[in-house]
Length: 80
Image (cartoon, rainbow, N blue to C red):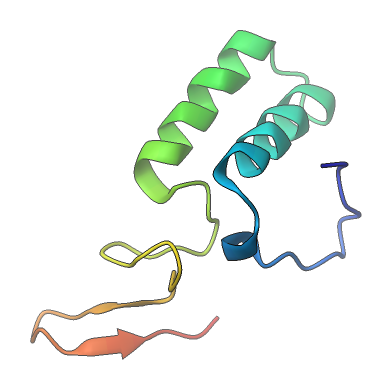
C-alpha cells in the first residue's frame, strides 16, 4: 500500500491487518523518522490496543469500530 495523501479518507475496516501494519510502520519511518525497530514496536502496541483502526473505541469489534456497549449494557453507535 502506498502512503495516501493527507486529505484521503480511508475505511480502515476494509484494509487487511498486514496492510494496516505496513502502512503504519512506513508512515512512522518515512514521515516521522523513527528507526524501523521502534516503529515495529509502536505498531505492535497499536495492534494490541486497536487492531490499528484509528477510530476504534474500547469494546468494539474490528468490523464496527464505532459501536460498543455502554455501562448500561446497551449497544451505542458513536459518531465522529
